[in-house]
Image (tube, rainbow, N blue to C red; front, side, top):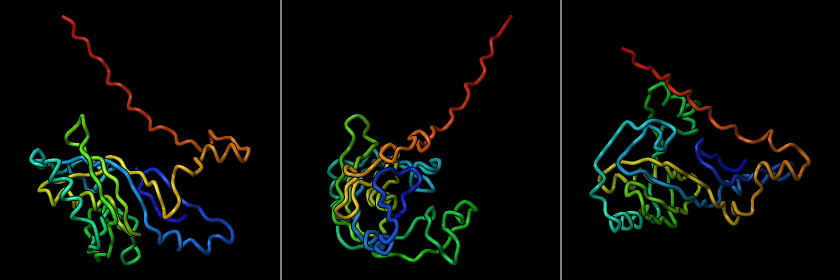
Length: 209
């Protein structure tokens, strides 16, 4: 495949087979486009909703104008520190493995380029900020969102992330796993992601006199 997606992320993934595997690097080097939602004032260890909120900071002071200005200020070349919850290897070990062990590993900053970063406050929930980001290979959008929040004097994490484009390829033109299975004459239900089991309801205790 041509670019890992975070566990909670959805969207476009390019797969190469046969002789096309020789050009995987070409697709991996392409710019990416993402959409998603940031939750202001609530931080998590993974910088997204895959871990529990462990940090809360005031966010009510953040205005719509400040959000737009801060996002625009992040356009262009910059340095980014990869998050601990990532598949990046340091000394042969995945960072997320060290993170789960409670070990903080020193990470080298990497060069990234943000072509476009647009934000819009949710009309019904002032704590939610929707965004669209066009960025270079190797950009961690979770970290981009957190850096935005920090520049505004608060914290935050991603509650949704979707990759919509890789270079000239769009998710709108992609196969779903299920539609591809149908086209190949296979049973699509075999490839559907099972919903997470719901917790059983707590037992009701009736008081008696």
